[in-house]
Image (cartoon, rainbow, N blue to C red):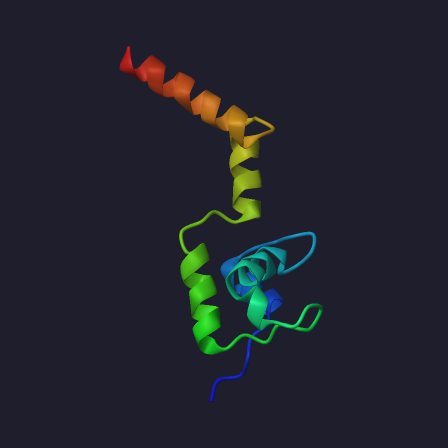
Length: 94
């Protein structure tokens, strides 16, 4: 049998670097399994649960990747990045 995995371990595997390690994973788990999990108890994920988390976050940018993109584009927010991309695409289409 596979050993259980914690949200922190899974977040590291997924490349999430957060101020509160594993928070994004725990938030997803609470939304998905909240009624099946005792409040304030430690999450020990089964392989099936871990795979559901992986599938949910697959293809999503990690917070550190978003910060890198914002820095490269020299903007402070995702909204500013979207605006900058729209401007670029509009200029290319003209």
